Length: 261
Ligand code: C5P
Image (cartoon, rainbow, N blue to C red):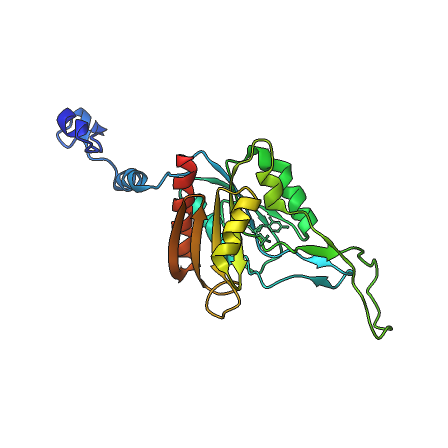
């Protein structure tokens, strides 16, 4: 048995207890449920066990008044799928999410936020405890400079909204003195790779996942997505597939790059 074990064979049992012959001691078969649990544990992917991963997801909502606001078409699907995939490989996941209509992944610590400023505060609140930061949220670039406290009336023929730039959450995280491993997303309608590379450099990221939006088949609100994952010295094409499958591949690639860093 020790020879088999030394060759990497896992031996389950024997269990101890009362035997068919009446003796008590080692020699019983393990309970079937115990065997199933131990075999399952052998096949469990533990790539990110012990690692803390924070993910931002969904859109942000920038209020104009108590009932209206400026937002975008992000469904949150990609960020939630990544949270689920990271949990499956053992990570402790904090999901900071803007308003969405999809179910929260079980076992993630979810922090609900509305605006970009809320999301920024929630991220900064515990980013120092994270190993990996994945910014998937479609954060509004600008917010109205003023939010009316009462519903705006339609008296005027024209209305001008003055907006002010929101903080760049991902750039602020990547610029911390001890930043976590930073992964960004670039959703573009044109010149995808050029813009993605620019963002990788400018925001000081470890990886950027670029996807084409604007068409009807991939990107915002669709079940499928295709991604080009780019680092300083590597480009990986992940072909169009269901967002859950894509999320698992992405998490595997992120974990690999994180380990190699
Ligand atoms: O510059 P751009 O908005 O295209 O960058 C996209 C990436 O930056 C995404 O990962 C997004 O989540 C993140 N981002 C952010 N805070 C912002 C704007 C973008 O974290 N205010």
